[in-house]
Structure formats: C-alpha cells, structure tokens
Image (tube, chains in turn orange, purple):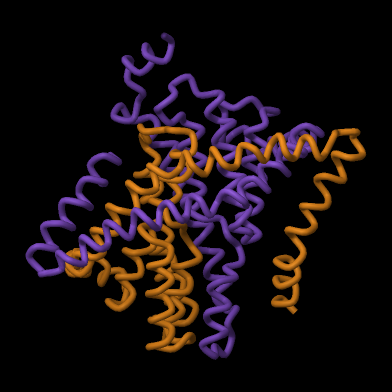
Length: 179
Length: 205
C-alpha cells in the first residue's frame, strides 16, 4: 500500500508539475512559451558558472579519497564512534556521506551486499544515506552558481547537521532493530 | 573555514599518498575529478533550463507569490531578512518540496533559482548572507522523506522489507534538519562569522 503511494508520487509528480504550472499561467493570460524560454536561457549560464567551484571541490575530495587518507581518518575517529555504538564497518560510510554522494552510495551497496539488507549494519547504512545530503557538493554548487566565495558559517552548520543525522541514524536503528 | 578545509584535503591527500605509495592514484583522481566536475555541470544544462523555464512561468503568473504567502508562517521566521513575497521565498519552497518528494532532478535547479533570488537581496556580492547560509544548511541536512534510491537498492538485495527504513530515515532527517537550523542560527551570531567591514565598503562602492 505504502509502496504504491510512493511509486505513484514519483511517477506522476513531475508530469503533474510540468502541466499545472503552465496551465495556471495560461489561465492568468501569461505568454507561457515566451516566459518559459525567457527563464530557460539562464540554464546554460547557471550550469557553466558552477564549473570552477565544482572542479575545486571534487578535485580536493578526489585527492583525499584516492590517497588512502580515509583509512587513517577511520582509525582516528573510531574510538569516539565506538562509544556511541557505531559499528566499525559503518564508519567509512558516515565519513564518506558529506564528501561524496556516489562514494557513500557505493559503500552502502557494498555493506548491504556483504552484511545483508536486513542486518543492523545494512539498515544503519541505509538510514545514513537518506538522513543527510552531500554537504560539500551542495555547498560548491549552490554558492558557485551565484559566485559566492566567502561561505561564512554554512559549512560548519552543514557538518553539525550531518553529524547529528548520522548519530541519530545509529541510535534509532539500534533502538528499533537492535537485539 | 572553507579555505582551510579545502587545503587540508589536498595537503593530507598528497602527503598520505606519498607515504602509502598511492601517489599515482592521487594524480589520476585529481585529473578524473576535474573532468567529472565539468561533466556534472554541463549535464545540468538541460534540466536546469527546463526548471528555470517552468519557474519563470510560475513567477510571472503570480503562482510563486501565492505559494510563498501561504507558507509564510514557516518561511518568515526562517528567513527574516527576505521580504515575504520575494520570488526567492517561493523558489525556496519549491526546492524544499521537490526535496521532500525525492525529486532530486528538479530540486537542484529550483535551489539555484532561489540562490539567485537571495543574491539579489545580498549587499555583499562574494559573501554569503544569513538567509543563504540558512537555506544551504537546510539543504545539506536533507529533507527527503522517501529515500527512493535506498529502497530500490535494498529491494534489489532481496530485503524482506525494503521500506522498513523509512521510519528511522524520517526521524534521522528531522533530527539533522533541526540541528541545521539551530546551528546556523547560533553560528551566525558568532563574531568570527560576521561580515567584515571591508567587505561592506567594497560592496557599497
């Protein structure tokens, strides 16, 4: 039942929005075709404006990941995360989550395959993936699109939110599914 | 802060790469990542044009204003510096709605449209405003209620109940979003995150 609703939303949402907004405009006597193309011409420049910011961000994260520094970081942080009951296998997932969406999804798939989707570890990885976003990517793309270089407190706030989301994922999965 | 973090990723990466013998992988990662970044950016052009076009219709027809007004009881406390019927408000609402529904493709262009609106109100061109930081923190904390990709991967791995992680995911998402809002509102008061006077001066020139 629930799956049917979820499926329905993801199947119909976009066509519905693409219909309803021009329909509303049409009845309000907006020249919908002209308005659309007027807005759409910004698409190219917005996408191109992001490039330097995204190159900077992905290159530095890519270097960090490829060097093996991730393993060092895992060893460094594991005494702390053990205290809150985060299994060692899940820690790389938690560290990867704010850095790389693709990387985190790769680790999650691997954990689900190795430990099983209904294991504690498989569930924790699943919940972690959904509970926060790829903070560094969002930061580069959103600020980059309007050429903001001084990001002030956005990064620390985003990372605090990530940490809270990840810890909550561990605690809630343990409470609901833990033996 | 972003300067320090960015530099540390590179510095630690290169040093560790030298000591672990992964230095060739580091070179490859640097070059491939740069290429990936351009691929992602250029890949956004089409979907960006689509949603910016749709949003323009919504804006001209007054729909955005109507939506923004209906949800002002949430938006005004979150973004006190943004006028309640400014187009940025509507774009932010549309972005969050797309995120909640898990429409990732639509969420990014709508979010960037919102950033454009916020930039119009921003007196310091290269420095993030409080409203921008709040919007960004909410976005990085994820507001997705139904993690469709995760459910699909779990189902493909023969989970007995692929959707039983929805409940805990919603709890974790609410916790992270609440933390984002509290953190951003507290941090913006700290002296180290104040906008420096020289930026103010440059902006007014």
